[in-house]
Image 1 (tube, rainbow, N blue to C red):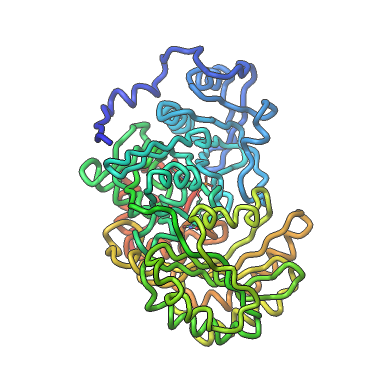
Image 2 (cartoon, protein in one colour):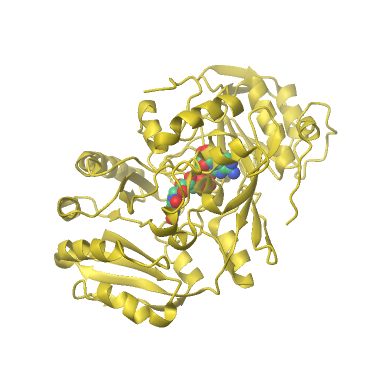
Length: 500
Ligand SMILES: Cc1cc2nc3c(=O)[nH]c(=O)nc-3n(C[C@H](O)[C@H](O)[C@H](O)COP(=O)(O)OP(=O)(O)OC[C@H]3O[C@@H](n4cnc5c(N)ncnc54)[C@H](O)[C@@H]3O)c2cc1C
């Protein structure tokens, strides 16, 4: 894929007033009433109908106001706990729409939420009364098999990337549930089944198109705006809106050995301790996520979610020690296509379900930690609870901590305590229980993943997500977003103190 250099001044001009009107693709009626909106600082202001209509008419995509057809669907995100109602939803069709939306938001100091795949567990991609900049129509993926590159739109989902790359015998790192957005996942880091072979999703980036707070469309790469390129690989949505991502691809024919190995809860203590010792020496091609969970019928169990993508000829030998960790209740690990593994959790992680998650990084599964997890899972009074330990290591650790903004390398697992329900009436019990249990688990953690439980993290603790990279990120936030237009994320407040 040929590198492009953007003409910044021309791109910025796209968002300026005076653009030819009347080319919006859908028959959305003209705005005839003033609109009350909230600013980033939380003040209510009135936008004139003429200003909003001017904004709407210049978009190639749609501008949805409350009551418009499509508004109710567009405001929904993955986590049904967040029932928020933006004043305006800009459904962008391309970079020019994004430039226009950013310019409008900046001019009126609006509260802005950026929606990629909509899977923010803490609801950051939707806001009450502000402007939602919605990228979910920008899902194209173009593969260049010769250069082994894929260019994905800012709202592409993980499944879009897998489905376009694998037919060419190529893959890149994505996450484990195919309806998750690649945008948010990649900007925050991005762990998945092949991360131990190839590195994080953000490590695969070669170039990203970013609309910054001043409405410029910049290319960020190793040679263009390289400081921005550094910051967006782990710094989340703090620095602008990525309208497209270019990923490096790796040869992979899609053949895997994987599935679930299920042990009774009585074997879990010794199995997890044995697992930790084995997995510390595991080859790059082996990814196994231990999960303490509830089986249909209510029994608790330890599930090892296995995915081997390399060295398949010796798969039996590689997996035999894990099969001997206890007497499995079920052994459903065998030859399988990678896409089957990448979609196996799509239904369990139901879009619109009500999820509550706490998380942090842990290096090892010590006796104490395992004992604590088992007490918690054994005594949980709520039905759908799981403690998942998605693994990292290998290639993730071979990138220096300051080579990108993603700091938390060198830890073997994430630790996630999750509850879920279907009805609002279940929320209080689920949330209350998880909150009450988390402090005993949290003391085993060091730092947390910016892509998970942000809603209750005080600003002072956000720097833990960025570790030793925080000060440099703060400097770059002041350069690229001094007004904190992009604040609904693991926010680096440009007004924040430079040192603790
Ligand atoms: C079911 C499920 C499974 C998950 N599995 C994994 C996993 O395997 N590995 C992993 O690493 N993480 C995983 N996560 C966490 C995931 O990385 C985050 O939830 C991530 O934010 C999802 O990205 P999104 O685009 O869908 O999010 P959205 O809700 O759309 O956006 C979240 C935030 O990301 C930013 N953002 C999104 N797109 C853009 C863009 N194009 N430009 C600028 N900013 C943008 C914005 O700040 C936004 O507030 C999972 C989450 C869920 C709900």
